[in-house]
Image (cartoon, rainbow, N blue to C red; front, side, top):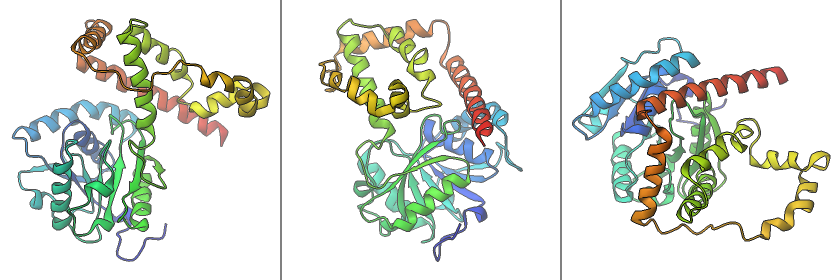
Length: 322
C-alpha cells in the first residue's frame, strides 16, 4: 500500500499505545500482544496492571488457538502511571476510556500533545462522534474512530470513521492499519450516530426490552430466538442477504414485492421503553435464570470457544470458494 507523506508504514510499527485498559482497552491490548506488538498502556486505576494481566491471561488461550504472530507474548505489555511516559515512541494509539464526553475530549487532547504528529490516534468510542470528541485537540486531522466489538481480541469487525476535521488520508491509513493487523474493517463515508452495527443492535435490544416489559417473551426465549434462529444465518449472510434468499429465485426484488406491505404492520416499538425498576429487575432475573450455575467467567469461556469454532468454520467455507 502507498503511505501518504509523513505517515508510518503499518508494517514498520512495533509499539502500540493503549490508553484505558478496562474491558475494551484490555481486550485491545491482548489482541495487539497476540499480533506480536509491544504495548505501552496507561490507566488511572491503581489496580489497572493487575486487572489487565488477568484479562490477558483469560484471553490468551483463545488467541493461541486462533494463531499467534511470531514473537507474540503476554509479557510484552508495560503499564504506566504517567500518560506522557506511556506514549513515548508509540506508532499508533488506541484510546478506550469510559464513555464520558468531557473526559474523552480532554484525554484525546492530551494524547495529541504527547505523540508525534504523524501518529494516528483512534478512539474505541461506541457512541460519540469524532467531531464532538476532537474539539480540544490541536491536531484533530489525525484523530479517527476505530470502533471495535466486545471482545476486541475475538470479534474482527472495526468501524472506522473520521470527524469533520479529520483528514481523509488519516481515515484511510487507519483502515489500512486495522486490516494489516487482521481486522475486518468498515470504512464509513460519514459520521452516523451510533455507527452501523450499534444501530442494528440497539433496534433489536429495544424490541427485546418492550417484549419483556409487556410479558410477551422471557429473556431466555429472546436469546434462543436469535441463537437458534437468524443468528445461525448471520455469520455467513447478514440480514440483507438473508432477506435476499427469502425471496427465493426472485431474490430481494421478490421478497420486497411479496412481503414489503407487511413492513407497515404495527409490530415494532422503536421507542425505547422506560427503564423502570421493575423492568430492570425482570431483565436481571431473567439473565440470572438463563445463566444458571454458570459464572461470568464460565460464560466468557463458553462464548470465546463458540466464536473460535464459528470463525474457523466460516474461514473454511471462504477458503473453499477461492
